[in-house]
Amino acid sequence: MTGLPVPVRGVSARVVMNKGGCGGYCAHLAADFEPPGPDGRTELVNLVPDKRLPAEFLPAVRAGIELGLDGVAAAVLLTDGGVYEADAWDIGYRTAGAEAARAALVAAGLRPAEEADALRWATWPGRLRPWPGHNSRSEELYGRIRRAGPR
Image (cartoon, rainbow, N blue to C red; front, side):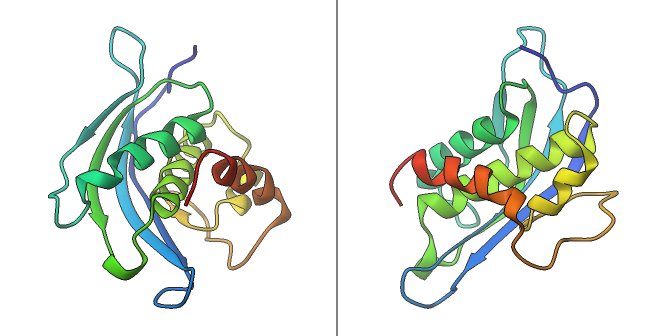
């Protein structure tokens, strides 16, 4: 397993799908990604208060991060979050985790820069511009997120 080679701080993912409407979901998280510790495993440390990121969604965040890292190990520090109670679902937090992790890989140079276009919810320092809409390259990642578990 390879490890993240450089720190990537200030990664954020804000997922908003049909907020306040039927069947929507939304989630927000911010994280710093660091090279893994001596054991070479992915670690997740949460510094976000429960009212900003309820503990019930941490397994979904972890699953999304592991999915997005795609076998790359990293130490991940959750620094902020957000919850909209009406549309707080596991799939939103899993999507936010996957997008944030994939953004860290792009920022660290482990994924091609063109992949940034597929990350419609994520931002990070150095990103030239967020992609304003859907991109076909995002289909593979979103398909994997949807297959990973129930809403």
